[in-house]
Figure 1 (cartoon, rainbow, N blue to C red):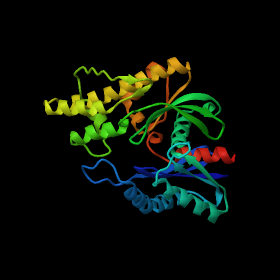
Figure 2 (spheres, rainbow, N blue to C red):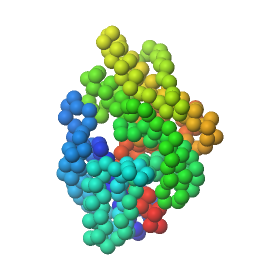
Figure 3 (cartoon, rainbow, N blue to C red):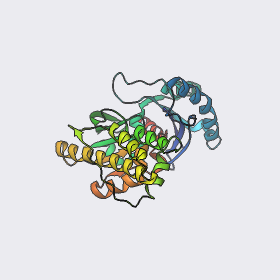
Amino acid sequence: MSLYLGIDTSNYTTSVAVYDSETGVLSQRKKLLPVREGQLGLRQSDAVFHHTAQLHTLFSELAATIDTSQIAAVGASTRPRPVDGSYMPCFTVGENTAKILSAALHVPFVPFSHQEGHIAAALFGADRLALFDKRFIAFHVSGGTTEAVLAEGFGCGFRCEKIAGTLDLNAGQAIDRVGLALGLSFPCGMELEQLALQNHTPVKTHPKLKGHDCCLSGVENLCNGLIQKGSAPSYVAAFCLEYIRQALSLMTDSLLQTYGSLPLVYAGGVMSNTIIKNSFTEKYNAYFAPPVYSSDNAAGVAYLTYRAER
């Protein structure tokens, strides 16, 4: 039996995962970073501090369930995207911890990007492993990123060329800002979705593209206007999510016209939203990760580590 350890310390979640190559099972432990009530996220210095405080506890919990002598390699997210110059301080916590474990266990250390981990988790969770050797379009939509990449799988990772994105707010940022304006708790995605599902009033939105790119700051302003007018919170929530759904749909249509009928993969915390997911599954036959693999997590990194060392 060989086990492959993955670590991911993103801006909002600390996570560790192990892939068992004998059983094909991914096990993970993850914990959101604490954010004070009413605040929109964390400074990088605070994220580094909280990751440092949380990571050892999560690893200890996971280690209690496995034989650590069977760990064959350790992987970690070391940067946000697989491009030169991509950097975020919070990833140094996971990277340095992985390097320490690699040295202590005398096993290889394998670096990946956070984005590659998201894509790998989506392919693993959707049982679409054949795409590890193919070309496809992947959307990474979260609080820190809203972009589409032309992904070229090469067996144990992805070459990613950015082909579309947001020109201002990320989708997750817009959701959190509107959610906080409605009195919800950060991160607001799940509560905003539940609130939107209570709406029974038709919603019409009109997002615009610039080329393949979207602009999402407008939805925050529109939703704040609806709140000031006394619109029902459920309607405001539904309006916000419909605006984002339609913007992503317009981006998808535009990219398919340019790049042809490539497979579509959607990853990131925003894409765990069932309203968006159900719509895109029906319209595009797109591939999504199960919710457990949609948010920031180390599962994709653990699986990539297995593929890299296989």
